[in-house]
Image (cartoon, rainbow, N blue to C red):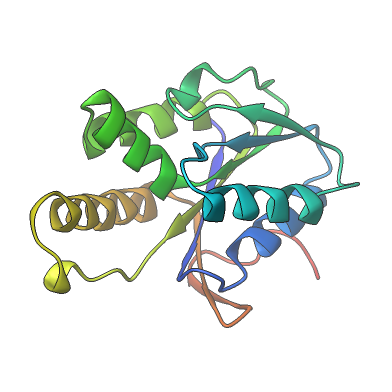
Length: 173
């Protein structure tokens, strides 16, 4: 089984940049597993931002909005999963899945590569929502907790700076 590194934080906290940096420092063949389905113009803009951001970093991009365990990664590779919240949203709202099935999917992916760097939105509060949105947020929070428990390293990004909640820096800066 490979190493699982979880990077969490609010939107625009620097999660993706830091995750890319860790993947590059791993020095292995790199796969970028893109999970966002571009439903809106904002989604398309975010996707283009991430494409520009990782330009020249030698990632093999795999568009995989569902069933990431089936991604064509190699056992000696590092895979960057961008991101858990999109994967869960796709599973729940488009396929009738749940947090447990997504956790299992991510765990199976982590077993297929040397290192899995999983990015997720965290610290969401469902109190201001109702119905399926509140249920989704609660499910994401539980999924993040389960991933944190299984991760060797858990880093929360705060305003562009990493805070190590579990484990130590994976590579020297």
